[in-house]
Length: 536
Image (cartoon, rainbow, N blue to C red; front, side):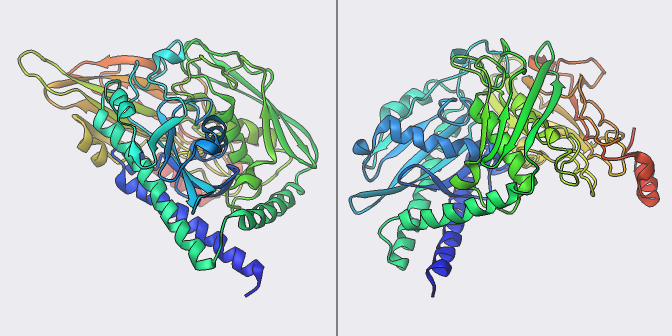
């Protein structure tokens, strides 16, 4: 067997290992955001902290930020203080994935006494204390407990003091601590499988395999970049923001060395928690470029390295400590469409119309209506929902599909199981798709109420209510979103608000923009759209 073939087999084995790592996290998770939606990442790194392989299961906001996080673990803890049996942890927004609700856990791998690599994983937890998951915080300190890079376990011994601190600072302690144990367990699965692989192939470390992976990947990604005309391409986008619109601006420069996105001209930071650490903006820029140029390319250090970003400190896409960042996804998810839009003319036939973009996450804090006479335990419920994606150059947009985050929409049954709420309606939203030669994806309508004896407050973190997804090349805009009670009373699209016990919340999620002149749509497809009520 040639060395190239052997290395390719080992590379495929690594990808299988990290996929098993991710599925272990899904199976052991307490939170529906991981178990049902796949809001996670899992990967293996070499001894220098360079990502070698990552699981297909996961989201760009976790995967591409976690790729940089392991370097912070190495720098902060130090290789001389790392031992077999250690497990490290953080939720630092600037050294992890951009906000406090994501816990990143890293486990070193030793072959004998030699440090040869790391496994890392990230998942969203239901609560980290503070104000709760929502955009109302005015600085990071209000948004929850911040865990600096530290040891969750030292040489196999759990850090009981840290566990105790966490249990006393979060509302759902069993879920949160259980999910961290799940993260450590999935890394341990990867570590064991990797050592088995090393024994099978008689390897002492990962160095030679890492060089092979990075060399082949670099060749592939630079080959894909060669097809993009050199130059600088610009785009702007306005989105709702919190209380006032946010202006996003990008200049994407394509050179012989890669692509660079500069966000100068973008609005300044918000006083509310919709700000974005630049590592998260980079994650969604990189994701957009890879799916446009080389969608089959596995993610690793070499595939991510050619894509860089910059922004002046203090703009909303380069928040700095202690700016509030709790719902950084609301603005951060628009980075992909913003940057793809800049390249629309340079990449004809590849760039879709704009879609709903940001997830319509729903965090409900359920409380007893009469806590004195009918006490009931407080419950936190998290639900992910998606609007329609933008039409593609040759295909319609996807309905109720999360792009660019890639998380799955949680089912009504799974959500009702974990909390005292009822999802009375969950259906495709008529008239929400943008018209075009290719039609945009449709949004959905969701109607939610509390069970008897409970009411709930919810933290709204919705966008595209005032600024719908734009069509491309003559396509129509998608329908804007709407938030209201079941009696028609309008609700704000951001911020914590109570739902009276006798009322239900109605979410009408935005649709995706259309692509191309609607007059060019296939006649049979147009007739079907009219019959089904897809177009407004």
